[in-house]
Length: 185
Image (cartoon, rainbow, N blue to C red; front, side):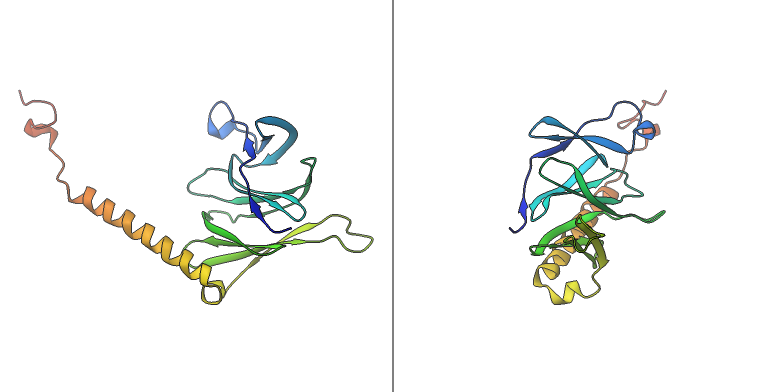
């Protein structure tokens, strides 16, 4: 079985201030509780895969964004997890796509790529699959989809820069001049 993108899963919403939210969040499937909690507050991507379901979550924190990867079986039990996180760093997922039945390519920043691989169980000591996350130094030159992802991100960033420069170009009215602000007395 290859990877199939899906939209079956949601994470429950937390109440109260962000600083008090627990790290784990209740997982819902087709709107119903699964009895499973996983780390994260937002599902960035979800796939049906060879080992069950793979969820990519984040903590919705713009300055220290991280991704958590959870592999679930058919009963929604967590089989394996790994994460992409560094102190004071941010990993905002831009794009992702399958490479083969066991591997996803993940695109971060302009030209930072990783491979997430489901490693099958093997031997008497490893009865469960595991997730292996490795940096992919040459992806953007070796994979045409990576080159497209880089161009798409550069285009989105250029559009944002242009939009911001338009905002900067608009002269803001001085509230003291009586235009758009408090009238002079």
